[in-house]
Amino acid sequence: METVFKTDKGKVRPHNEDSGGIFIKNNQSVLAVVADGMGGHRAGDVASTMAVSFLKEKWEHVNEVLTPHDAEKWLEAAILGANQKILDYAKNHPECKGMGTTLAAALCTEQYIIIAHIGDSRIYLLNENAFSLKTSDHSLVNELLKSGEITEEEASNHPRKHVLLRALGTEESIYIDIQTVLWEEDDLLLLCSDGLTNKVSDETLEEMTRSEYSLDEMAVHLIQLANKAGGEDNISVALLKHSSDHKSKGEG
Image 1 (tube, rainbow, N blue to C red):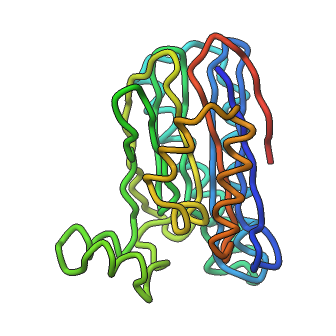
Image 2 (tube, rainbow, N blue to C red; image 1 turned 180 degrees about the vertical axis):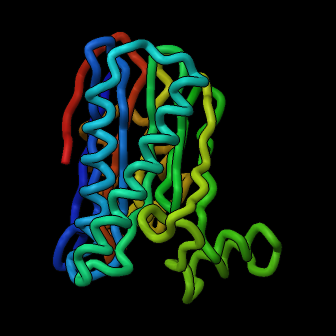
């Protein structure tokens, strides 16, 4: 498996509230995470960093090979634990009240991927036949779009585009979307924050991920595209390619 993670604060924000990383086990199982913090006053980066660090720590204690069912249960429990940790921290630190984070996570083995997410960070899967979005944004605009109340064009410029209906660390009881998908040699997985997808179309994402660039070059070019389009938000990209090579770059 080849992997890379990169994050950039963009051209407007004073600091980066995104966090993420790619964490590899000895048996070549991989946990990839992208989190987009919110809450301002530097609380957003606290929430996103706490979520990623919590999942990384839990992952380091997994020593057995997990079945897809067990992997789903493990990932759900780890994310729920991260949710509680963020809530507890905010209770004890009034300056962080209201903070939260999106989370897109993928537990990858040679045979399958467990995809979990909450918020509007996204996960895409590229294979020989298709480039498909595997997550559905937990946002007000996406609900309006699905109900037919607004068009795709109206959604892209909607004034309440950043209103989330679900996020990590904002409520005691949360619901996480989790699914298992299969992948094969040369398939590619993309996890990203909305700093990328708000600026770069799915068509361009597919074109870039089908290119001959290395994963490192792909991540660099994707971030550059978002910055050239304005770069108003932080941008995070995790790429994982199903291959016989074992190359990894990036964590943070």
